[in-house]
Length: 229
Ligand code: DC
Image 1 (tube, rainbow, N blue to C red):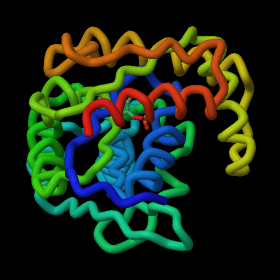
Image 2: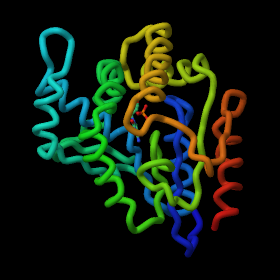
Image 3: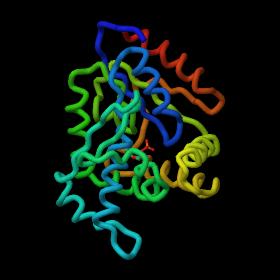
């Protein structure tokens, strides 16, 4: 761990399961910065919606969710060096990674009131800088002036393998083809949505992680960050 006096915002964006969280955690630890996983925030809202506003026809009552969005309080706490997501004071970090939440999260995150609510929370959290924030729109919408922007990409099969391993480790029962379909579907929804679609910021540096291990991605990224410090 090193202490750097210059405090910047490191924005990490990219497709689902490209290793954004692994990279963000390592960079945050190295620079003694805070780490915020904004995907966890969209997942927490989705988890809340499924719990309170799930309709019989496998849909979410979005107007009711939006009406009550201000009742959703999201925070992060550090537990044994791990960041955990709290929803209205309760640790939901494991539940928000379920296939059920993954199935609905891209759809929930297409709604502009959901995005406005979470983006303003993310901007508040990051205002003091010294932060690594990961997501889909950090370099384009949340912090368009971030000093350092990294964009991760990789082919869908490699990303589905990563997600499948993670789910099995978390104890979720699933099938590889279901995970692959979910990754492809989420890419489509993330990239084609009307409000802040997933796209590389013009000043972001892209890393294709398909043939790189986590260490190689970290070392490449650290070089990019060091140049900005
Ligand atoms: O990073 P993740 O796979 O946990 O993100 C879950 C979903 O949240 C993803 O499908 C798109 C959405 N998301 C978003 O729209 N904007 C962000 N900044 C982060 C995530």
